[in-house]
Length: 433
Image 1 (spheres, rainbow, N blue to C red):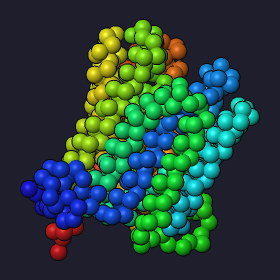
Image 2 (cartoon, rainbow, N blue to C red):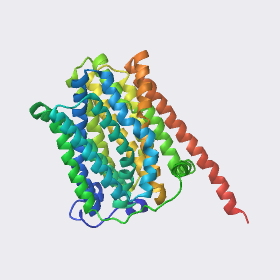
Image 3 (tube, helix red, strand yellow):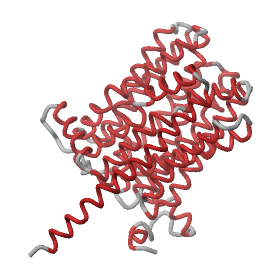
Image 4 (cartoon, rainbow, N blue to C red):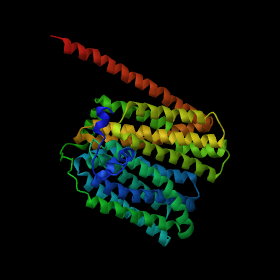
């Protein structure tokens, strides 16, 4: 065992009676605050996925328009693109627990209000569009705060494990949540999904109230724009953060467009209906869940370059091979691999930049992570959708992933050359009299 691995090993507490391999996977859960946070999220995230399914079905019932459904998706993600950097500044100024209590409570109110509109039959399309816009705005503040809050709950030693376990519950919920939503919609109606989601936020709020953590936020009086620029400049001038963020940006735009390409692949290439599409998406989700659990198991050694580069390469290669076949089971297996690689890559980026970030800038750094990881998705969706429209979906898979693969190798070589250039200069300065 290396010294680095030893630093992430032998953590006393909750998991002492378990085998070492399981202690590694559950290390973050030894922290009381993280256990409270994680259990609350387990309930709430499943409710969020239920609402996503119910919202999409509601829009189709109200409008019978795929375009208007897409417009709701745009309304929900555009605030993340526009306001997440501002959200990072807020999260660095305000104690994160208090901020999360506010955002989660407001999300609960939105879900409850939309549920009442559906229950009374008064709901209209503009209501759904407005609520999606408000929910997206809250997410622009909530996501950077929630991601950086994990550091305050577990510290450096168990950060990677905490991120991986958080990712595992998210990906498990995206398998369980839609399935529950289908059953509830069929038996009880759409309104119940929204109301159940509203109730699920109670678990988060209660657990946040029970958490006791010393705040890492410091009061600031500078201009918001200046603080945003400070965060951007810090990322640009910190190579250990800038390289993974830059790589994440390229991969996000070029190789994370499953929501656009997989439905087209299922219908036009594999000639499958909704059930086939659901199975393909479930395979991708299962791969993501497996990747999160794998990352939790490997987290005792901290973030490693092989996980960062290997995850990006595996994600790209899986999609390039998808473009070469028109067999359903081959596509299912490759989407499983792509989901696994995606979480290995994104989780390693997340951990790396949080460990490297200064405490007073961590939320702003995570807002940049959120912007690059989620805010750029509409750009990638537009590009990949355009390629699929002009040529075909297999060309979209191949072109985007090939560009991301070449960029991964190019950026890795570029970073390596910069490190090698600095090394001789450092050695020369140390040997000078």
